[in-house]
Length: 333
Image 1 (cartoon, rainbow, N blue to C red):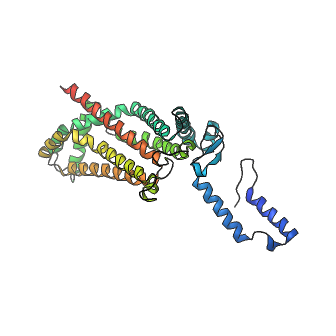
Image 2 (cartoon, rainbow, N blue to C red; image 1 turned 90 degrees about the horizontal axis):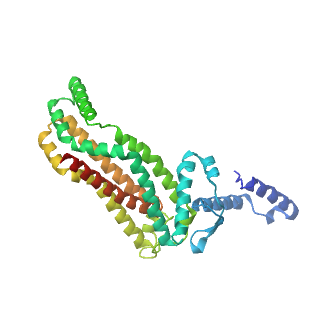
Image 3 (cartoon, helix red, strand yellow; image 1 turned 180 degrees about the vertical axis):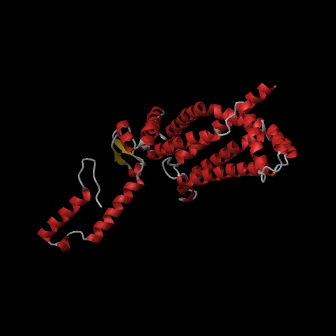
């Protein structure tokens, strides 16, 4: 295996050549053997992998005070060569993070403010792109009593193909009447997923977030490791507070829509005696719970900066849900 440096030289090929030349002159017993070379390569690779925060607008030294490393400035053109998402999302978000971090003072709290503003911008764009689908989801929640009445007309739709088709047609007619796209939630996920991957890459790769810390917590470090390592020391408690806040906000964000429509849910429970509909509701609830568990689990492996992003994003989602719910409620009245 060879490592190609920025100027095109194959480092390990040169190492082998130099090793042989020096060994021929002073004796092979006086130069590193193959085992040492393999060990050295492994250490170099591990060191490189450990320093993933390498996206910077300017040349400089980045990282914690005790282990700063030199990082070369990256360009947007170079990001496009890495991949589509890298050019479209990762580099712009990482560049925005560095610009805002420097604008807010480049310290740990400057990083927090940078993530806060970046999250508001990213989530604001997401709201604009998915507003129609979000309103459609609220409309669908409001239509649950009517859907329950339709489902009650076809109690055997779970086993009878004719009733299943008739139920589907009746539901589609109701959706069309109210201008709802039942596949809107899938479109939201299709839009959100690449943005999530891009923001994740930016938070992980941003060299500016690797420098300094907030209450002892380095935002580029894995949240899970910060929670487990160094009990009662450094940023241990900060990591736990962030994890608890993020988890609580995500839980409320996931359940809020159901809580706001609790009265309708009770009405549906009294009206609905359709096994197929009950199964569909159970599956929907299970999917929501799985998504919540996945977010909590993933937070252990992602940088602490993503915990801040998820916390702020959940707060924005809560506000969005309440606003849309009240607007829809006001229109009905």
